Length: 204
Image (cartoon, rainbow, N blue to C red; front, side, top):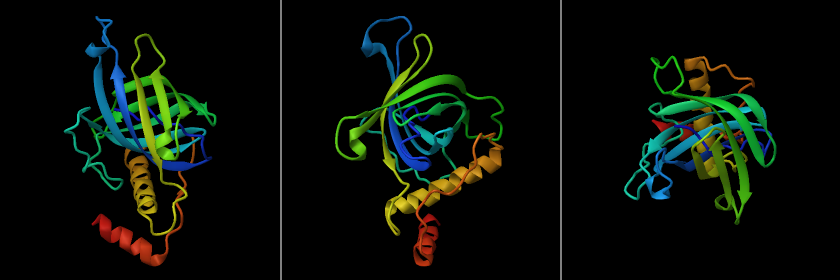
């Protein structure tokens, strides 16, 4: 439904792939076992002034697969963007809207305020966790990780994914006329002609 773990200000401009577990508290129970769990896999274009992302809902269980979660996909479940707010190096406080990936979706599936905070508990990307929550009574909360794609070396899988995700975000912005408060600029490492041709062949 949304990238509850986006934290956009680690760099001025970036693209990353994120994974999150969303926990929705039960309305009529105080037992954590009665909460609802869901998972999300997504790609996000982010900067201090906002973000635009797209992703998939996945079952929060060991049997769920994620082969469909590709940066060049056009069959993602949802897209989301911030409408106001800002980020620092450790926290985001934004208002965002989330839409189903359909030309028929005229109203957002969700319209919300949320807060995300970065927590550093280990080495590398896997050690950087984001904890976030809906800023409302009995709001859902989430924990997630991210894989930074911006700044990857030429010819690497991460750089291929970065360019593919940017192309998807740019097409999403064009197709749905997303009203962003910032300009979309490709932040990925420039690929050589051979790498670029190979990337396009892999997407076919």
